[in-house]
Length: 545
Image (cartoon, rainbow, N blue to C red; front, top):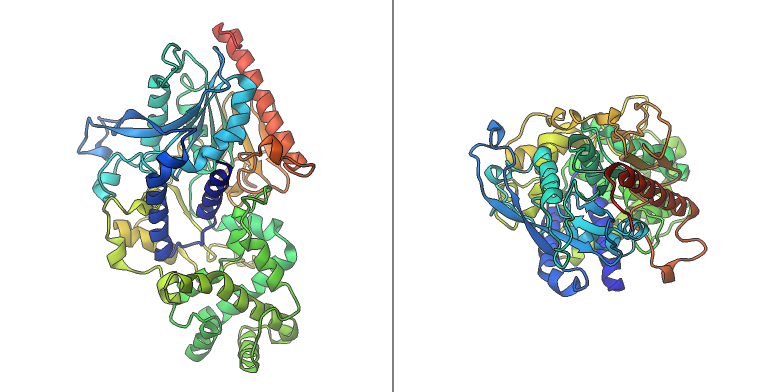
């Protein structure tokens, strides 16, 4: 079980560590992973079998947005652990978010969900999001079917779940809300969901913890890279900025076909389109999000990338021809004076990209073009039941935005990804897959409060170094707030993406792990949730065992 736990957490990290634009080969791989997880779920989740509850496909029969309407229901999956439960304890729901819910099971075993359930004598629950994993309301992923994949429908799913759930084996208890305290936890997109649920359904949900919650939808989310630029190791950032500057000077400003060809050929990517080439070069710096305090699940690519590109030694065999070509590229990119310093760094980057990316492509029997291409109209037109990759792009193309560009960065900022990665490029999937040519309607999300969202017993936990920080309440543009038991507002120093969510078994704990700042924030979460339950007891007259 422990081995499977680690694999699942690694899957979650892998899904999160994406390029600004996901190549088609990775979209296919995501769908294959989802299908494989569904096929294996009954075998590997014996301790926590999946259960289902019938949920209406359409919660808004009077809204023209969902015409033609349906009265059908679908099976929404959930998992639960009642081993800590005592009568009067809460139901603590971890929102599955935009991935297969089975990937969240480790949090039920040893993460924040397990910790909160134990601290409160509660039931830990993982609830899968509609259109992800095995919770499929429709038979395919066509535009017509995906019309029911919206923020408001997903929020209504959770409310319906809490008002109607009956846990197998616990039927003698009335564990539905509002008769029982239901408390939500979510990280990232799911963090935004639980914040909205607390404000939109306050009579159903007693409290919520939003970890790295994205509460503001932003179409051009160039700010994703700002915490990386500011918080990542600065020598790595500086070298990366030099690389980006060289690439942009050659392709955007120089426009010399021979030099552009030489640049791409140096990396073995001569047949890629300009934007796909720039996208591939961002694979090192974008690994920042997948880093974690737990080495067992932390993505390794970011620090390997930084370690190699900042070395002043040649870490890979290089030929005289490669050195000569790299020198010409550095000069054409406007950094000729720094050539002695940049030369080994650039060639180490070439070696790293070949080892980390191109070798993997070759191992899968793919050329670099097949592996890193993001243009294929025939692929994007596929919308059958196997195309599970369509769910999240549908959401961000329609409502959330979050197109991660280099072009959006102000001119006075040296970006860490190329300005070739712009809105036309990052939105191409919206046009090709769904026929969407307009910007995302972010107001459909931001109407719930955006950076100003606030409510009693709504906690916000964020990482100071999280790329998603600027889309949440700890953004630089957001107002400063005090923290309190009623409205916890916590920024974890030197933390990235929902670092409070995962945990360790007692026999895995060491003097260094979890880090003190993680221990403290998780203990604080348990403390204020217990205080919330004391308030529940006072106001509702329920006994907390």
